[in-house]
Image 1 (cartoon, rainbow, N blue to C red):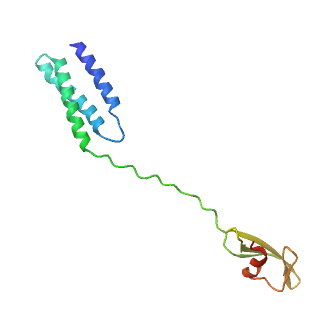
Image 2: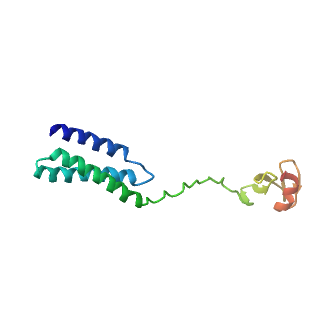
Image 3: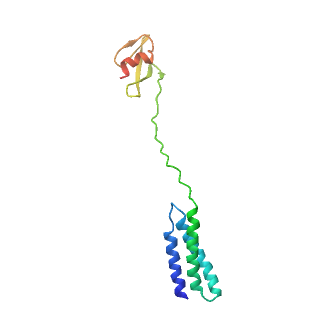
Length: 148
């Protein structure tokens, strides 16, 4: 009788380990059904003094039934993996005043911006290449020279 019990325990253990498939429920149903069937068969078989045979028969019937039930149950699909792409910080065309300097962000041909720093000189402003402006130039005016 102990021989049947240990053999069935090993079979149920192997079925439980090998039945764990993340893509379907058939293996899990067979493992669970086999374990429950063996337990029920052992209890019923014990009443008729054939515990080992009851466990084997109950385990086999439970595994087949569990596999049949498990194959009809669908597992939900995992959600698709989402990929987030970091966007670079965008600098908008702007003019910043700070003391005697004015910084103008000018759109360039690379899709970015070039910071043009103008220094106050008398009543006007001097650009980085020595050009003189009577007043703070517009972005479009600076883009001709610095928007490359």
